[in-house]
Length: 572
Image (cartoon, rainbow, N blue to C red; front, top):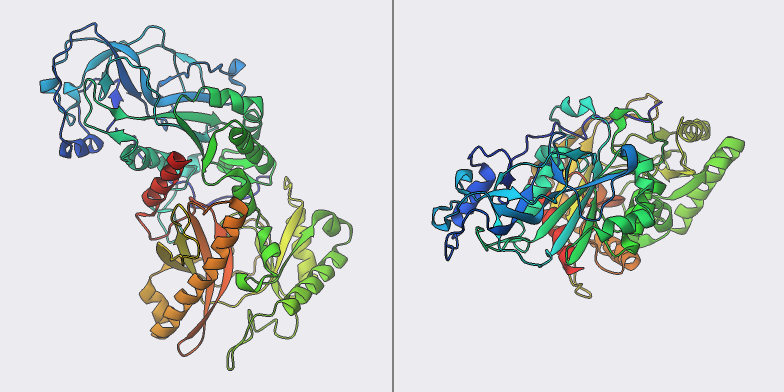
């Protein structure tokens, strides 16, 4: 059985739109919205025309989201035999060729593809499909960027580790709703990565400069796409596999963006669950890239990404008063499967002990914190899994017997490889506040950090269904005005909630820095907010969310985050 079904994670891919650096093999002489931006750049006029047959280098591009595209095979890359393994192709990069016709720089117009140089690829280039199989070389193509032959490495080699398995039809069936990912889609989707290239990589001022043409500077980035179909392919990227990949990256600096989700489930082979990779395979591959001197620039370094998504920190930090976390314990699978009654009782006793050691302050006249139902002892809470998303593996319990059942259900899911689950006490709250942080680099010791953006959302009434792996509550976005209305127009309480969340964030961000050795590039902090009286509010920390997490109503969020990730890659 497949573990769960996402309802709104991977929207329909958008058609590929040429970027400012397009080298088109179509030869239709047609402009695009991407090249339109080049009109504002002052073209550098060429010193003299070039004749057909002149040796040049041209910037080749192909659409990595299309299964019909033709790519360049990296020099030194040996494709897996019979397609049994990951494939790696170059979708964007400088390569060798000759002019197929005379080129007059004075007639060059970046907005008109028909004026771009017509080039003939070098005979020794290898072209291939996304799975690595050989493809015929294009006889000639229009290239937006050309230059005289030179041995100059690009500033950045940029590798996208992405899904290349069976196409999932449900990606085309998504309807916009309050829980969707917005116009960019979710990180593993083709739509998201097409936008990442167009509005991130090829909009970055340090990676694309000048107007192009013969001897123009052009892009200084090569884009490699590593397609994987299942966890076995990812295991092939560990150890020597990673070293082989990194040797093919020719840029001065190297970064890898991992557009996959770690999971504690066996591979199902069901295309409805594409993009989920065994977490041990994924993190081992990421660490292997790092050991081969290629940083993991998205979402985070391997250690940090694993720590955040495991959710084990919920137990670690629940003892620290500055974290403002509900009491939490980890309960192991062996305890659940051998003596579930004792496992449930031990978890409840441990929650009570943690809360007694770290009581949350309650001011006069305020309700019990973090919940009224647990005022005199822990009787209600939730069970959840690490490496899961969208409120799907979260079950509520209201007694010891219910906790026993939830633990057994959670740890007995077919195909689930989790060794433990998370048990937390209940939290009363009115809505969630999501704060997006992009800390400055380098770190300014002692500086107070403020969120770049705040978004809010509310969960509806939870259903009473006990089905594990399904979301049990509706989801809605809230504006600041919506939140204030929910609090009877109490703006003072709203301001207090923002201030208190930001204050708690100082500790949470510093803790991330302590395990990362530097400020995190980007992080989302989710807080549960409750109005406790006139002009009063309290916040309880919910979770860390990795770079690439849903931005809700922040439309400029993804491009802002991509720029920060690329800046970090160039600083590395």
